[in-house]
Image (cartoon, rainbow, N blue to C red; front, side, top):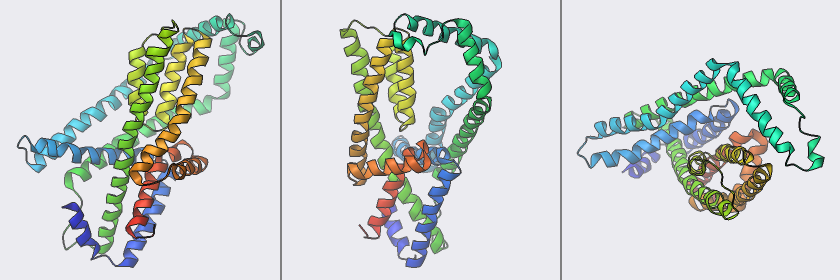
Length: 345
């Protein structure tokens, strides 16, 4: 039904208006990366897509379309909003606890380093502090030198949370009210609705591919944590938790891998530095392989070859950093869809 409406609307859009809307949309996507509001865009698209997936399920229970959208938005707000709220509370609590937790953390890190000194090769001892006092002095010096950066991290976290909340609200409003339609809608508005539909479709194809990629990554990580290490008589704590975290955060491209890798390596370090080194090496290998699986799985969804996506990831990372890597597959899928619609590729 929606495709027929779009096709009918396309007849009312002059070619120059369509072209202008595509240029403006492309510039807007670049601008979104420049002003660092990608998180708001992605979570807004996610809420919009989830509502359209959940609403048909609610209709089976006899709900009207409006009631189904309201129920879907309530469910999604709970699923997404509660973890954000908990994160804000925990962050506020951590800040309120102040220096006592920082001192405890430094003490724990010093104990880990002290244990590491008995296990690392002699050539590496020169790079480790000799005592707790030296470790604390080094930590204090580092904190002094990077105080501005640490403050900036806190501001960045607050900004991202603010953007996520706004993205949820905007995506929910659009999903609930729907896009404008009817004979009174002008050609430029219709053209922009086409751009929005194309971007939403690109997002859907890439994100649901990311679920498969996260499942693959979790399987390989689970084999390492739950099978390989026990066979070597190495038993890490919190294995089930780490596997669950790997899948959940793996739904976020690139950043999710960094989070799960950090957790696994730190937990491995509590056993020995050699286990930590082995974990790091294994994770590096499977994530290098994952880049190719990533390109292949997502490429099959957006009809792009693996080498195309690898080039996109490389260029976007060089220009925009990690946000560029996250946005790269989605923006490239959008670009290819637009070009395919105009029969240019």
